[in-house]
Amino acid sequence: MSLESTSPALSVVVPAMNERENLAPLIDEIRRALEGVVAFEILYVDDGSDDGTDEELRRLMAGEPRLRALRHQRRAGQSAAVLTGVRGARAPLVATLDADLQNDGGDLPKLYAAWRDDPRREEVGLVAGQRTRRRDSLSKRLSSRIANKVRRSLLQDDTRDTGCGLKLFPRDLFLTLPAFAGLHRFLPALVKGTGRRVLLVEVNHRPRAAGTTKYGLWNRLWVGIGDLLMIWWLLRRRRQPGAVTPLAAKD
Image (cartoon, rainbow, N blue to C red):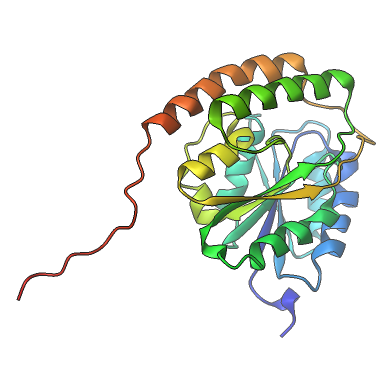
């Protein structure tokens, strides 16, 4: 039986808002990267686009049975779109990447192999991509550098690039995490807080070729401060019980 004829083992979730021009190239890139590697599905979440993203997805779905799409009635942000996708995913393992083609879909097999080949795979809660060379504007790189430095200092998550959209994780674990706007930027710290391991994999990053960025200095740097303090408080309050052993009745 071919991989393509089985139930998906991996759901690739792509949150998208006004990315019509980038849909077909990324879907083709994901398909070429994963065919023959793992049985997969591609699940787009349209976060209330108004550029015809939904119509283009409908057209593309007609020619690709592994492509599904969900649409938000109102824009709710990237984290909400990721959560919608994970909830709708049919596979036990989920990978995410951004819809703007700056993440390289060809890196998905690297993330999957890091999880699959780890000798303690059951302890892995996240495989996180780490961009080796950012292809963004100076202001975007600067805000990310400041935010990453503050985050690492406060949360001790040992991750230099938590904002990379390329990630892979067990679906059931993700659904136990607190849901809030900005969740996707704090996954390493939250996963470590559950006692699971985080693996880091270096990935490619490309300049945006079409469409416009949805983030700037104010909605990347300053808005994240409140989220950062909330996560810091949450992790300090969390307690791990260690192994849980069932007790047997005495004879």
